[in-house]
Length: 294
View (cartoon, rainbow, N blue to C red):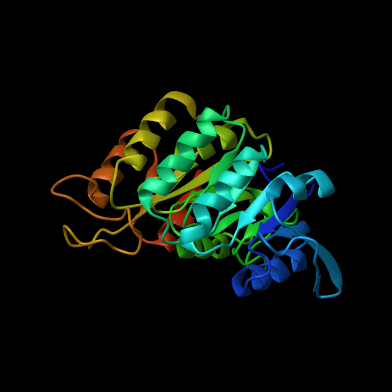
């Protein structure tokens, strides 16, 4: 089992004809993802050869959905075009939109989230500024390396791309149902809570790793949700114990202001509801092993 992404998802790559879009289209195809075409306004009607596979290019997402039956898009477009690209996908009622692009203005992301709600909330946005989502052995949408782990029964939700990769590798012998990189911007389309709810309902997930970082209160809210709604074991890691106050660290949302958003405060909130929090990724992996049902 998996959450949100399986072998049945049919994927359009927005920005496929660009260098990043093409590179990661190749990687997604190589990992078994059902990429069925690309979207680049003004280049519709072309066919692009990707390692021997002829993929059509469309001017709009709606055209791509009508022609291919796509239900997922991966967004690899520059920040200035991202709002239009994601709006195009929302207007086409695509159920899953994975926004890899970094540097999208916060007001654009907020507007996209509001537009999705105005359209009935039919579209789940993952990101922006995220590595994507992978259900190992089934499908991989984004930039997550597919060869560092295996299929299994652990779920992972993370603000950090590189920490996603490290925990996937640390726990590669156990394997994962789905790994979701939600991104570290101040406004994201999918939250820790969204993933925790899905993992709790997924019969193929036995335990969850939650990776957070300094800034905001997402981890504290996740802790409250875990206390009320999650019965499966959860272990955590919070990046940024040594981060100086007032300095953005890595992600736009990773900034400590006064006593708010510190790693220590997040650790305290999680541990108060029974989530064991590692001080390093390796320790977190060990805690997960100890928490798994025997």
